[in-house]
Each structure stands twice: as structure tokens, then as C-alpha cells.
Length: 269
View (cartoon, rainbow, N blue to C red):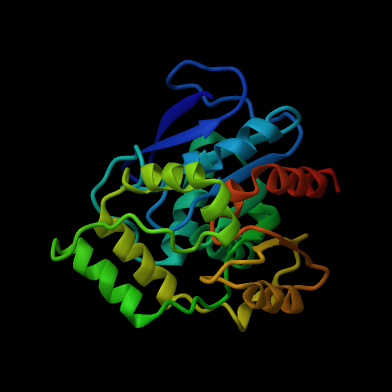
């Protein structure tokens, strides 16, 4: 899969795309089918969408970003708020010549997608919030645990939190892959991302979203359970909701084919 760097707000921003490679200073062609920008979750990176990029790239122009200080993008600090990440995404679109796009996002990325639909409606054609919430409910103990890791007071433990029991039982390779993606980003950045998520509350505003919306939820997600997705569906007029069995908070990886098929069907609409 081709990758590229572009300068955005002083950050060398790494992104994944599908299609012909181009010279370093030339943006790729994103005109095939629908342009779809996929945003990763807290402390993660754009490569977590690799299954969807490969599938949707047959007919569309999907791409995925590494946010500042995530994955292979430059920087040592994440951004401070969901709104800052929205502003950065729009600046990225400007840098690569994308006027408008479908915006999909997992967890933190889903909140960014909804915020963009509210604050930058002209840049957003439709949104796909995946395993996300209008208001995250992150236990204080989890926040404190991430803070301890960020400060070097605790190790970054290998855990299966957020995965479906079916994934843990039958597809442990998906969990190993998720771990390898996570450790590409400094735990201090993961911690500040969680703080940004905790401070975000879109419950009142999302009723103003007037973009086509597909919400994807994992039936076994303990972090942003289906009730969070149902709340979003109830507030956004015409929103579609799909709850996927045998999937948790890592839905795009746990049920990659079903996630890709749902996105493909939505883009065709």
C-alpha cells in the first residue's frame, strides 16, 4: 500500500492511500469513486484501517492519517482536544487538495468525524462513526492507569481489553496485531488522547448534523457499547446503525470483511 508524507501545521504527516504513487511534492489522485478519509482511535495510527483501505481501494479513494505524534508522523505530543484534531484534519485536506470527503473514524476518530460534520459541514459529505460515543464514559481508574504508564510508573501491559470474547478465543493474532500497532505511539500521547476524549461532549450538538450517517458498533464492545451508538442514531436524522456480532471496540480489525462491506454499501448510496 502506498504511503506518503505531507506537511500539515508544521507536522510531517504520514498517510496511507490506494492508487498510483506520485513524486514527493505531488498529491495522489483521489478522484476515483468516493474520497474517504479514515481517522484512527486514541493512541493508534492510520495503518489500523489497512483491511478497509485494501478493500475499498478497488472502487474508491480511501486514505488514512497518522495524527501528529502517532505512528510515523512527527511530533512528541498529541493534540489537546477533539476540536484540535478536527482542525488538523481539515488542514490535512487542504494540504493534499481534498475539498470534501466522507469522514469515517474509530472511537476518538468517530468523535472527530461528528465534530467535523458540525463545524466544517462544507468539507464533509457523509460520516461513519465507528465504535464511538457522543460522550465517552472512561472509568477514572483507566485514566489513572494510563497516566501511570505515561509517567513511567507502570509498564505498558499487554491486555485484551476491548476485544470480543470470540476474538480472544479464536483469533488471538488480531490482538497481537493491535498490540504492535499501539506500541508505535508513545504512551504519553495515548494518555493525552484519552483526556481529549474525556473532555468531549457532543450529546446536545449532534442533533444538528444533517449529513448521511452510518454508525457501526460492536455487539461485545465494553468501552463504547451499542447503547452509545443507539444514542447517536436517535439524535441524527436518518442515521443508519449496524451492530456487528462477535466484535468489540476493535471492530474494523475483528470483523474486517463485514466492516468493509458495510462501508462499501454506504458509499454506493
